[in-house]
Image (tube, rainbow, N blue to C red; front, side, top):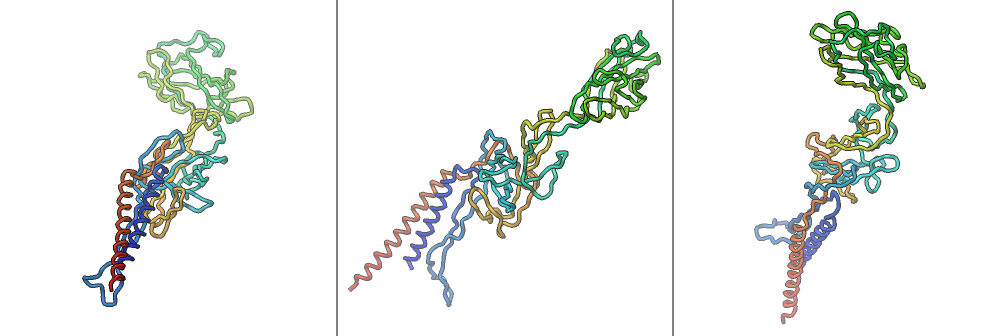
Length: 412
């Protein structure tokens, strides 16, 4: 029996050294989770029961358990390097087969898909045409490099102060080329359906009626007939103010029609002067805001702690391009390792619970960072010394049993 006990101890110590050696070998592997050998004693079965004098017949390795503790977060210069701070795994797709990883060293392939170093696609939530994240079944994440389509101006808002001290212009007939026919002017940019920008210019003319101003407008410096302010092409709209200087005209003025050239559709927009005043102070434009923008190319992207990929475009706009998801399990130690920093679900791990980073008990993600291995080299070196001593001790028990057997053989 002692030979069997010593032999089982040698095998167990050898496997323990294998586990420790594997931990040390992967101490620099991103997202690696260290393992430990779990031992169990072994007793022989007896028809009459073991009783209180039963002697064990050795040991065995009951399981190799991985420890999913948090690894240190290290910074990098790749925006697609991702670290999970907390619970959860990135979900990968290999031709539809799901696997999971903590190694967030990702990059883009030639089709714009986010992939791992061995070209497995990272999955997450896609977006619709407006950039809204669609939380359906996870799909391979793809960062599109296509141009952002232009958006025509549909709303133009300004807030300004018209000087109550000004008088009616000396020239009665409004003319854009004659500064004596209007009091003040300001302009802003509007965008047509092709993404072309146009200069929308507004002219303010004080009338003889107290608190009333005529509003004329042109586009691209053309005649007043290029803009219809709702009263007919070339006819002014009116802005009225009460005795406290507050605007009383209902807003917005709609529809305001701008005739443009170059093949684009004409612009129809709301014109809003809410917040404008008529005080005894100089003419001042407080804000000019319009909702159109020209087309733009993807200039870069960033990823938030919630996993949302936000694209930044050359036209100053930003749009969601997708969202990373994380998966967690009831018993992560029950996952089956596949190599290359990947695991697959098993009956012991339970089904994956998929969600967005930061939701529930899922951790947050950090871009420009990776999660280092959770191997503690100092502890592993100490464990190696302990395992080595255990191996030597078991070898010594076999040697001692051999000496006892030799003594028996030599009896006469």
